[in-house]
Length: 304
Image 1: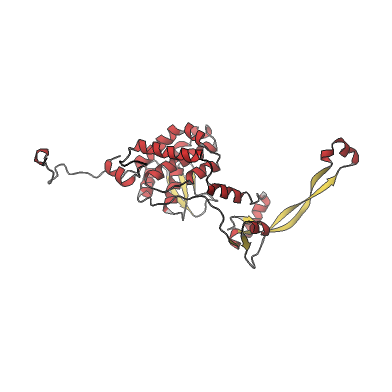
Image 2 (image 1 turned 120 degrees about the horizontal axis):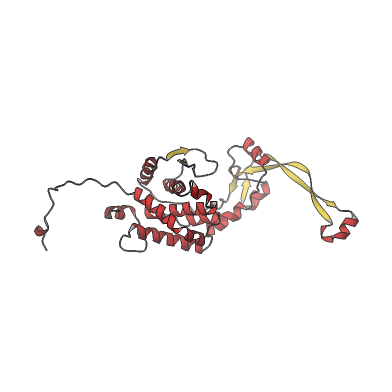
């Protein structure tokens, strides 16, 4: 990386002078490891607590919810929303689902005498209609969310897109990715439209890392936890290098997949190599210089 590129595109870490690309990568990886070792952030803890209150619906009920309200994202019953500090809007039409009716069947005396801890057993008696409401039908306190990436990636989205084109990787934008911000398909990347520029760039780096690290043989040799950890670590390193404000967003994402500092340490080499390739692709093109600058001063003509 040229000195100009270092000055204009790289945010230094705890240093008064610009770092080399390798030093910058190492410093950012160290920062990410420190965040993972510090444990879950308050934002992630609050988010997980809130999400645990949402019921996991059966496949049949998921289809019913999608049929009645295709735009639904988070659904819960009237009292669940109340307990989360939100109220269902007056006149809101509930989404009908089927709720199981559970009863208790008493065992015969002889069976009960054999094991007094199992005198009764829970049995499914049938189903009843129940109603849930989407978050868009409620009002009140905001649901907890994880930290987001902020900042201005400048021309780096276009530079990364050009790099992908050279690599033969197609880049497309979609209005719906089934809840994902981006997806890597092997030779093709899809990015959710409508993200902030900072989030779009971070997502694009994440999916680019998947394309570079997790196809062919290496995909079968790694777990989903490791693959998501590695891709997000690359996104963190590259994002910090161009000056984006990540906070604990990447650490939170990694911990959602049960990733930790120990696993990250085992993947350091591939993370460093991938981040280095992407950062090199983001360097601005070198402008051709005149072979004989008219105003160039000879060394002996410069005053001491």
